[in-house]
Image 1 (cartoon, rainbow, N blue to C red):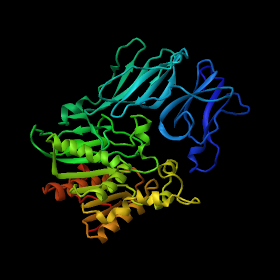
Image 2 (cartoon, rainbow, N blue to C red):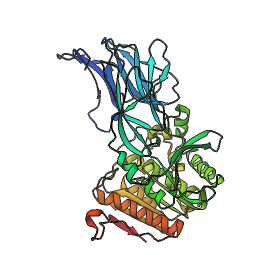
Image 3 (cartoon, helix red, strand yellow):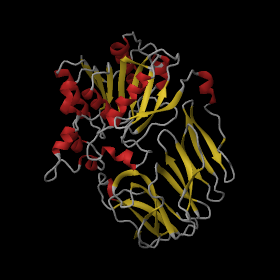
Length: 478
């Protein structure tokens, strides 16, 4: 809605099919009714539209470039509200835009930007088109909103020791001010591990960042088992923020593990060249970036090269499948909702938009690049796997459907590699039932301890079911 309430800007698909998500366009119309005016004509799904204060322009964001081609870091665009050619607000941003909004006077635009391991607020003067950074820190800012009357900002800020507090930033403030302290008791009650940004050189010399979680009992000069947890997407990035249940980094740290979360090639927040390294050849150098990160921690004397563990979910599961077919250095692995066969995955998954540029076309077009799909599939090299690996997937996962895990599991089992397949009843791509979440943590820890550290593990029971046997998803394997 425009600020005077007279006009509406919105996005909608030109197709009635849910799968045609890329056919989203920007429209405007009078709030009183009448004909809608289409402002964009491309194959990129636009997001987050907003009228300028004077109603002459419309702002929108998209994961695209100045030619409206797919698979780029987020950008801000402006288009005349009466119709015309959209233009990129700031060409060649070295990071990605997650959200954007007009200032009160319409002379600048605020942007919440993804900068790899952290996210920050920027302001762009429309006269110069140069971004000015307003916040800075080892944190992740999110849930950002702006007052159209005062240009004051409100956002949540998460850190490795805080799940998120509300902060405000006024137009004359030097830094955000903390408003809430609802999570203060967490740091007072629990022993939380130290986390910090680390960086190393990838296989070709490119700088790669990641986040290192230290074991709670860390002593310099002592080596520790290392868990390498790769994020999903792969167009995403791990942040200096509080741990989620699926990563359970504080639990791993308490059991003496170091944890590395690498923002490998293909991650967002590092510029388009870094993001698009996978285009035309999924993985490409991404798995080499991960291995280089492991080598870096071994060289620093932190990681024990004989006690390496690999885990990840979704795109992180894809990476796990790739890693175990590439090297046998890892003593245990857990692949969560990971793909193994890119040919079958293209037809099975509910999302295909970005897989087409990854492989240079569809697998069912004339002269299909089938060899590219297959050559980049972990299943192609699954005969090389020696790492004991478990596979976890939701029964109703439509993003990375169960057959992907089944293909990998059956291959490992046939080849005599220790493996299990766990299918969580009713669960979609992201698990939501607490008993299944606890099961994931338990079964992974038990697997890691058995094969990597050779230590005993006692399963944790849910507090409300302390005297009951934990409900387990369907399990097959041996």
